[in-house]
Length: 326
Image (cartoon, rainbow, N blue to C red; front, top):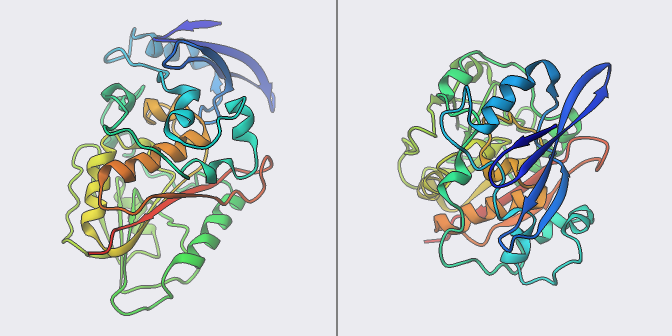
């Protein structure tokens, strides 16, 4: 079934998994030079039950339920890496993305354009309703599988200051009922910021929390040079004002403070931004790296692939940077 969208097409391919008929999404993507490539199943797109396809289709093409036209697939597409990097261009981006360590290489030797390369429509979403409504009911679930959680927790254990280090403060942005910090980890100040108060109340690692919609108010209500560590777990893809937020992160981090942005290939598809849902894992690392770069005040960002069982469990990636020393 073909569903028209601008500037490309969505091919909905029926399949059957665990007895449930689902639709999986394939995209024909066009780069800036008009060369189209079939990228394949979008790893971020969830299986869509057939019963809800009519409303989904109307939303895609700008009919009932759509607030305004949305560019579903960004023109950057598969050409994103080749435009930003000095490394030898692989014969096939798809093949490159499957190579071991591909995500870790995308932020090496980057020649960033002078101007921020993304457009306003790249931060549009299928569902533009208030995020406070979407997150009104608590979800006491995890959004990545257990091996990915264990990999992230292990990574934190390697880069966090030791527990109970005097003066150390952490901020977990877009937090919930769990932060995936090492078991028993404690500091005198660990702040959670999220959209659902019931979830934040249940988070045992937090010493305090703030309920705030960053897509409405990107101003972080903390003094300059407050935090040693800022974490954001599988939520960067929902930020519609990322540069404003990353500038604020730079402001509230102490000189040399560490910002850790982690992501997988799962998301609430209707709430993720267009640039994210139209690109793959390696592109996502480049996108987050761009946020650090264009926000200013950070060292060159780096990417780490901490996926525990490639191909057998959820992938897990980290893009991190430190605030420049004063």
